[in-house]
Length: 230
Image (cartoon, rainbow, N blue to C red; front, top):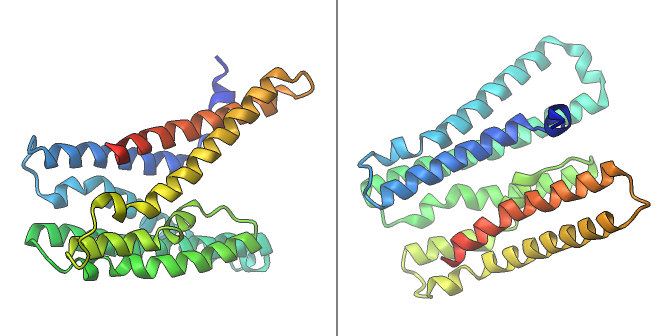
């Protein structure tokens, strides 16, 4: 096995996020099933770790930027710094939401619209960030996810506060629409992977890239769809 080829596209930041989300999902399911009696503040520990690493990384990046004025004259470096500030701002809003969720669960709050308020701010900020990212050829995956889910956030908050009495199947309609789009993306990569495997004119690197993308999307979308349907 070519370990160099296997890890050449390794992204440490995404690995940290996915690892924290996996651990959080396990702890949350155990807590909801009463298998563990931890406080929700402890259950959210992987999320706190994720946000802590973001804040530490942003602090280090800001310090390096402040101590090296020559970086400000480089166009690409300025774009990188602005992208970091946007990401940190969105993560801080998400952190505020997560703190309010923990506090609300522990206290038994009935004012979920207030708890979801940071997400209502995140969505328009994410839309603006996406526009900026497209103009500067930046990949903003978290921002896209937050921007397209504003309606879902509103529906969930209204349902938790019992302002609307819709069944959860209806409340999650925006999510079904998003998942339908993601299923189309998975199908797109699968079709192209099959075509590239059958074509003799495509170089091995392109085949490997499309197969990797197809497997990656399937690994993400299929478990999510199973969880939402279940």
